[in-house]
Image 1 (cartoon, rainbow, N blue to C red):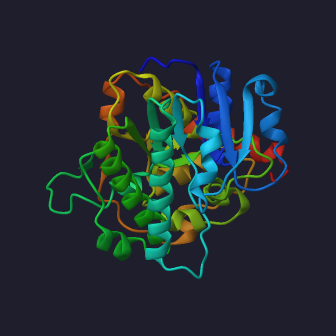
Image 2: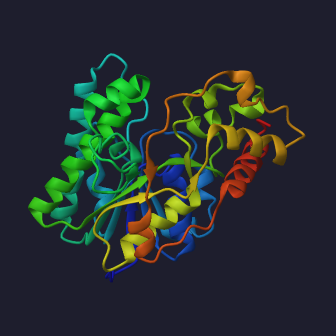
Length: 325
């Protein structure tokens, strides 16, 4: 897509993916407006090369979607990355999902009202596809699949609220965009892992590194054996903003492994650490019954740059940087 100017907005710029995306965009010569929710120290964003000249930081809250309007003004592209990862525990799943949908649609309306936004890229999740196709004889999951809400609840009750919210918000966003003639592309990453630029390790990245701390918790949930480096996810977002033929949904998942193979890989590659093995942790989680397909993204011309080695090497170096390992 030919942008009138290289000015874009990234919501949730202080998050794991959001901050990496801001860095990539600045490296690509974009001017970036980004939103943050809190008043935490944002020096790690301000210290990115190019930030002093081309990064503006706005405070905005998903509970107040109108607060995103100043950051969107003047932008040709918008990346909707922000998502409530720690919603109010007193709220029901239905309320959390409704709030997510309402805030997302309000931000999309602000994009329309700006008269400047040419395309929006929304960060969804493979959670919105991997619990679908229950009547299909194929175990290959692509963008035509939509997760079944009842199956999510039965399969992953501990993460059901997040997964349901992602699924229904993406669906509502696509329907809204189609109705109003707004160009919207959704990115469906698998488990995002690897390096990080913030001062703290993202919680889910920490979770996928628990084996380095002598714990085996992650193996118990290794139905999530699809991984993708944060840099590849950020690159996919930019690629899909810029590509003139991009439309609809795109699964973004680079690495497929198994709990057994991951255990062997980590023990072999990092012998200096007392990495817990699968055998010591008992059975792994839900039996895997699907295979994610990134064919649509790859056919458009995208290519992944990072494999399992780079994913864990990067995460390890980042945790060393912040003094955790």
